[in-house]
Amino acid sequence: MTESVHPCLHCGVCCKNYRVEFSIYELQSMGGSVPDHLAHEAGGNRARMNGTERHPVRCAALIELPELGPGCTGCGIYEQRSRVCRDFPFASYGCHEAREKFGLPALGAEEAEYWCAQARS
Image (cartoon, rainbow, N blue to C red; front, side):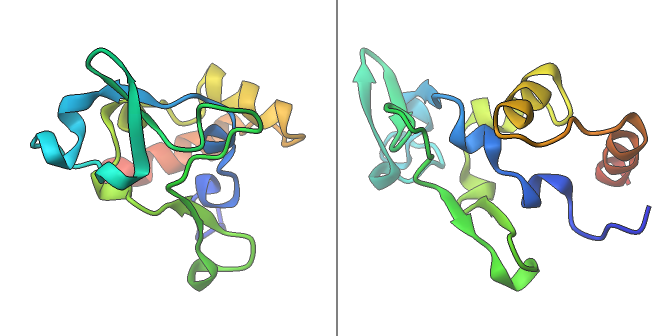
């Protein structure tokens, strides 16, 4: 595998496809890590990332990352992202479904295995 940039950094379609809703206790003002200005109340004890409440979906935290290469995008609050984003499985059915919706091929088993191994090491 010669690819040096994780496939997610050439993709970002999960951030353009899914509503991102999480507990208000994940907001910084409530002791969590998600910056308050990037989310809004979604009712009860739920918050939602700005940009994921409407169509077309585009999470407010999704940013261009030109320093990683042309066309690279990623989460601008990666270390502060919500639990739902942390738990979204790479190369899962949801990942492949979103990639297909945006005209991208599903990740091959070898590619997914390689990047999962990189994450473990």
